[in-house]
Length: 143
Image (cartoon, rainbow, N blue to C red):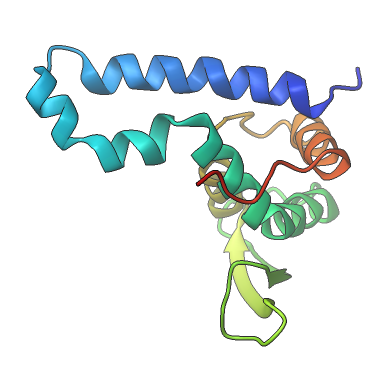
């Protein structure tokens, strides 16, 4: 089944609402106000989609590495990953070559951090997520 970015954005909205409810449960208005930055980072959908926009090249590198090495079963095996970071200010045109040697678990954890979603070890779903956002990238910023 082909899914578009709207499908994944809807999932993200649901995840954000559930996360907000969990983080603020039992807290006073004052405590919630003090959590403003954390809540924005973890539950504000425009912030979450902006993170996806900036880290999409990195996510692509992880998905491709996972697909390339899908037959490797050793959980401690590390795989080379290479991407151009578009969030770095070190290069004059906004890109910096990034390299890492990561295990399958580390790549999946980073994909979850980027996407604010979890598809576990389902490479087909990660590929669908990546293709959807690359076809219709989210905006790079909301302020």
